[in-house]
Length: 615
Image 1 (cartoon, rainbow, N blue to C red):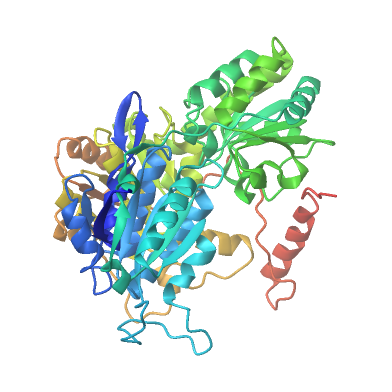
Image 2: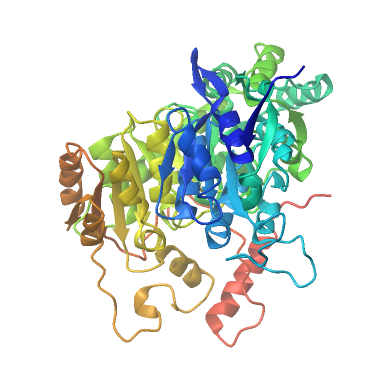
């Protein structure tokens, strides 16, 4: 006879979660790093009580904003190379929908997170319950249906026993290299509290290990043939290299076969910045070295990259006649983009299989020499823009100061605005995972909460968060959470008094300076925001600095402070690094009364002719 234990659905859920494990570097660890929770009437009595009962095995963290806590959970998974992840629970209504943006972020970036929003009453007795969204034409709809398009797996739990198959499917998705992404289990609030006789076997400990799919023999043959025939091959290293823990395999492969490597924002730090075959960033925010080689390449081996428009220069970067793309990716959807030859496999397994088949083949010495010469020139250009001057500093000069003070051993966190482009080009990343950029969804407000998630995953690391004043204003509340949890972050706020990055894009597309910088927005009085005082009010140690030199001094001082530190510096909103870079497809109006827009449209039409056409 099957042994059972009577629990509420929420108790069964949390007990199950606390018994899911993984093994990392020989150590068995809980696969769930914890649960972020902001309680309301839709989850406090059900899952709130259940979390209390397992609070030692499955820690609960309290945040100040539901989107922020979900960002922290996602950053934890990214910093853990998807080997561990977290959950986030909210009440019904705005608490739930606040997390939808984070779900989209995780979906785009292929990152695991378990969303557990409260939902309506399954029995419908109190309808409409507080915060319920009513559909006039569909009685089954709730606000949580907004999670459907941004979840890899979605389920609504309307009976307590449904949590058994739902959790089985959830774990499959959260741990699968191809399907990986957000899972939403929408928890009807009455069902959270309903009991069921669950089989004890449901709570047996299970160890989840990463799956490493091997390449198909036919696809491997085709990839090997294309590479052996190449004269100017390049590798694009995407986030999949890091998630597969394939950095060492990539390094060995590139060295043995003499193939230059260029990195996406997600893949940066796959190779150390100072490796001679690391050409740096690629694409719209690419180094001159990477983009020079990409334009000439006859074969592009894209490893673990989804080849988004910033990486491919809106598919205008690869200019060589007959250029071929080999897509090494665990997900067929990504492996076959733009008629690439797919090599569907784990990144590490795929590189090792290619390595074995390519044997002693190497690219021509002249190609490697071209790469090394291009990198030398790029490093000179990068140093020129990061060295300090007496003028109002640029983002690049602030980046230089942060690196001089803290070095490549620090883990750098950023997400949006102009900084991702500058950091992608200019930050000298060290060990794998030391560069943490959320640029798949480019979510303003991710940075501070994301930094907290990184610190939870890597508590011994020096975590530096860089963000602009626009992102700070969108979400800063998790400064208080970092202080409360004793997880120190070093936060550098670059104040250019508005949305400087989009202002520059507006100018580049012929637009007038309008509604981006504060001075160009409708106003009676320009705000004078004291970011240092604001952050200090949340418990951080803060300082406003007046120059790049003062910033370096303050960063050294902040290193000795035990709690979160926030340093603020004014920057120039109009300066960005001219060296490197590539055209980006941003549609310009075909008709305008403004000559500058008409000129921009003419230039735009010319640039579009470069785009790769797939037949």
